[in-house]
Amino acid sequence: MPRKRPLTREEKLERRDAIAQRAATGSLRLPGAIRDIRNSLGLTQAEFGERFGLTRMQVIALEKGTANPTRETLTRIAKPFGFVLGFVPRPRPSAANSEGD
Image (cartoon, rainbow, N blue to C red; front, top):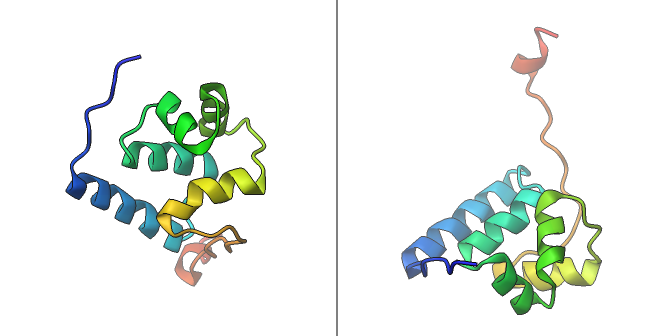
């Protein structure tokens, strides 16, 4: 498995900010979030798994959306980003969007 190019500090911060923005707007979904978090750290699936106590196959399943991770696993992954687990309401359609329905 080829190594990823190490990210610069600025690239890491930009990627983390983008993830935080998506989380704040409620548009961050688990499979994409796991992949984006891994990429923002500049890690391969194997490296990410090692860092968070997972196998590469578990990381693949998380990124595909086929895994059923425990709260503890999600908390380990979320902690470095300052995220906590919880329910996030989905954005409601605006009145302008629902008028034509």
